[in-house]
Image 1 (tube, one colour):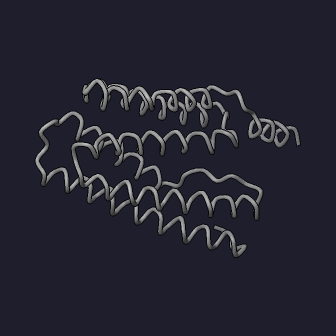
Image 2 (cartoon, rainbow, N blue to C red; image 1 turned 180 degrees about the vertical axis):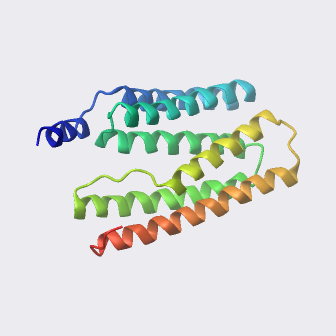
Length: 190
């Protein structure tokens, strides 16, 4: 009984180290955009993106290791991820027009996730975190952005290959989320 009470208290916490790290990542987004688009310094933007990625890893590790997973964190962490990814893709789109494919897929995926996520929360009362395929998409997007930043004169073939790989994984991920959410809304266990 006591452990259930502690677990419920953890889920409802607002101020936690992982949540503060997610908030910090949100604060880095304008700095990334400023570095890339205004200062025209892709390496600085890449360094800030790396810092953002490291704080993302740290917040996930701390949340799991020290039992600091919270409902706010389940929302704040992916929002910080998606906004960071979107900002970086939009920055890269200024030099790599094929990034538009990832921007469009991401916008569609996230719109679906918000609507279906609200329906799932309404039905179950639970906030679900990212699944393995969502984490792979995050890794691929950060990796693709990093390669495009570091390799300033990336060949079009390599650029298109990375963008295509991300696009395929994003489509697979949204398909798996659709299947999962339909099952949850039908009352099936997933």
